[in-house]
Length: 388
Image 1 (spheres, rainbow, N blue to C red):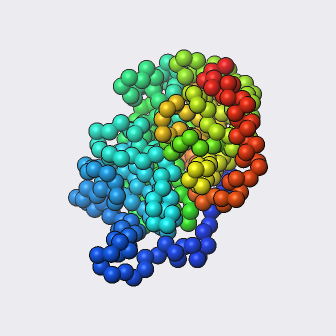
Image 2: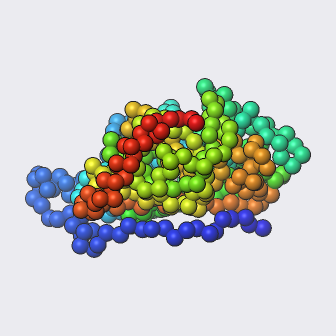
Image 3: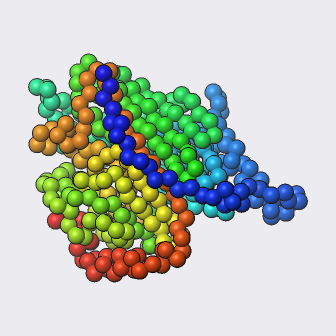
């Protein structure tokens, strides 16, 4: 029996005209000229170095050196660097604009086997997202102990997929498929598959988990991207409610989304800390970098997201997930809050898409955007509150 969430919403894909695509193609130029140098850089970027059995491949264009093999996917619009050994995580995701690579996710400038995974650009969340209160929960008449997995963290967080080395099952220029075997995991034993694929201006991710343990357990999936942020960054992600959290970041109670955090249209990100799980999400969101005239459409078959906005940083996190924080300990258990109970051999699949588009400059200056900024400014005091 297969348990899979196949009702994936239609992904809005950003397409660039063939004329625009052809303008990215390198033109003949004399050796030693600036045009020739640009052509060489573009050629290198579109012919990625792939890790072989004994090759430690550094992502083309990454700063410094690396002792971690990376895979680079490229097409005329996007570049993606993946480090399978680092939790199957992404080290950079860029938009190609007239030969210049602009960061969509925060870049990981120094890739190393000893780095903190939270310095990556994105990583998968499995077999659960965020924290589990007291490191335990009750399910099926059993007390389930979940071990701590991070030094300095009092609670287990984000599962163990982001901390484990993945293997490359297959790879080509625009697609890589990774696998993770955790058959000996406790309490979660599972096998996972993670696929990254470039399709025009869209990065598509598919995350799949199969319960290989003997007993049924609630499973949940998500992705944890660190998106680039500047003073002009705005977010649109309508949600009907959110879980307010305490000092330990565990949810205290569910409330309707306050006006300050409804994000019904593109609003500037709050200046101060937000770190909450939002519910009743449509599975669609948009990020706008007005200064760069760039936008990102996010589509996922999940009903929740976690928003994390650390003040003073050049990134924020928008995490599409299928369950709130500590779902297994909320009333009714994980199954009542978006998680999927999988018996032995059953699978759960989630899909995520990130589509990049260059904004029309006239549309960006339109009155609806000025109105959004005005409304956001008028409620800045509420938006600064991290807890209510």
